[in-house]
Length: 380
Image (cartoon, rainbow, N blue to C red; front, side, top):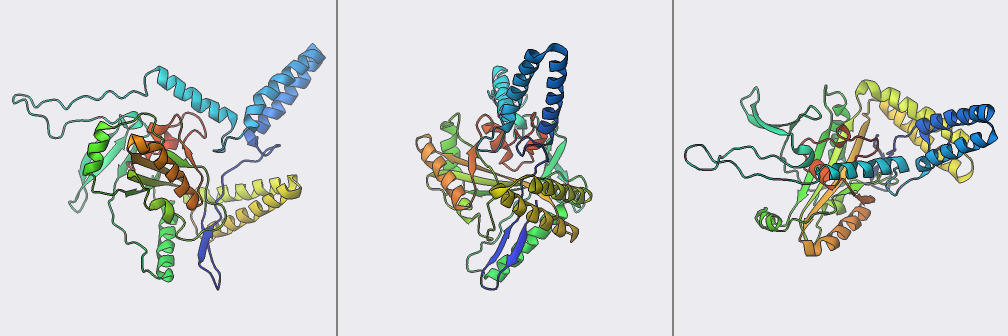
């Protein structure tokens, strides 16, 4: 995905041109895999009818249509029926094995004196259970923490920053900041072995003491952690996320996390060229209002290809939102989070069946969900 900036002579700079990846196919919602299955099924129907008779051919056709129907369905989050079923089956299987339960153990005492170990091991739940924390030294002698997630063979370095706000800052300076951010994202594709860059913004009404006391005694199972369904529609300004990053009344802590997964610089050209070819195919295959939509998609794909040829990076991104609140106010705060998302032109969905995984990914400790999913499209 790429971001573009267009400055009108009488308006602010706007950004946009995000696109959801898609593949060509005979039917728009089937894609290349579903279309291949459809063609193979038609051949199977004809062969069965020829070898076993008309009735057998009709029976195979019914089975084919039953298998393709879920692929044509789309949930509000944009997933097809098979992806939804795979996610629910995975949750049910994990629950049956007790993977949704967290059994914590106390820190063992220090041998000899009965005192607790100051830096003993404390396993985190869920996908972070196998993670390990190391302290390493840089070539300059600085000590930094390194998080290792063995399941994905990922290593993460965390950086704590306190950026300036945009209050009383002129628009030209803000535009320069955004341009610097875009340049940083573009350079990620040139970093060897880089998997993802995660940015987490936390907001809390106090330093954390009240939060620790409240959360320690009021943990509620089934709390809703949220994921963005798609990118903002149309062009947006640099303040598009201001509402989502702002105050959420009643929340003890709110965390907004952006995960950026850059395409390798060598792969970006092939990807945007394939997107242009796909858009050309869809634009020529549809008519009416649908054709107008595909024409706009083709124009966006061509613009992305031009920007990539000029040196822009190509990056996939996702957004997660977690909110911690008193159980009595949980539903009210959750609805506020959804409204804040709408104010930022985002559709947020609750991560049903994957709350723990989404919450862990939103911590910004190096958990990249696509590296841990068992079914395509199952990650928040």
